[in-house]
Image (cartoon, rainbow, N blue to C red):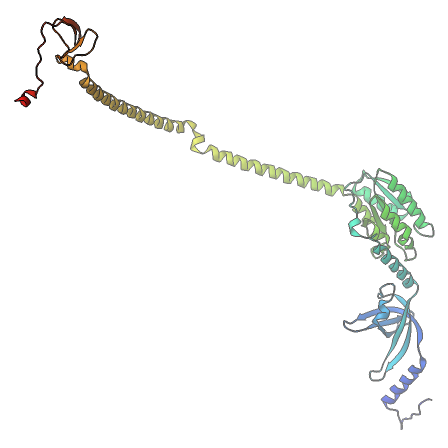
Length: 416
């Protein structure tokens, strides 16, 4: 029922708000299509706030959605995605705001396509096809570069011209294939397998210019992803522009943002390398010169030492020490010989003093019988007996005429 109002009987604000609330409630849940322009996830809350915009009209509406509904989507919901929501319109009279309470979300158009690609990416990632540990390094200077691209395409021109500008002697082995359409994935797979079997090809580049999500869809084909994963030759993905990200970028050993960037990444710049070589030569020359200077300084320091400046100066001092030591040895030896000579003279004098010969020289003599037995007593000696007399300078043979015993010195006194 319409409200009955007049200038004399106007309706209060609360009545109008309550009426609008009733009208909105009678609308029931509806399907609404629009573009997500804002997503707000607040920590600790189970409600996600979004803004849904109509692309043809500058009209936006606030969405309130349970977190579980958003998390259940096959692909993360991002700003700019086109979606269809099943929601219940609601009007809050206290604030005078209108919103939609979302019950279900479905991506449509490009959003649905991206959702399927995200689901495929998750499945292949779970198998380990995108593992960084499987990435192979590119050779510094490949002998032959395999190129998979469309015939006479801008991508082919960008790769060839930029690569040859950086390194004029670079060689390419090009395999042409459709870069979009239903036969694209199959032809690219055949080209990659052919180049992978060629032992002279050191790296393979798959290049194509930008395009829509549908145009780049073959480069997210599961068969192509598995073919690149199984290749033994490093593969470079140069598909589209910086913002494009087909699944081929994830499985390739190197992802180039554009075909031009791929040319810069696969071959070095001859001018830069020449500069680096010159810089390295200068560093080596400086290091050698510095080493020679240090060694020369060390030699100069050694030569400045007295021992090396005049080697004979040290020998003179050592020769004087040797002469002094030799004189000391000679004096010591002479001293010891003198002492030994004196000791020997003393011992010789003692021996001579104790020698019977010395006694004989003082006038004594030794008597012995004919048998040579020394006679120390008159006993046993008879007159007329032959005896021998030993004196200092010889022997005397004699015959006794008389034997007269005499008392020993001191015995006479005893007898008395």
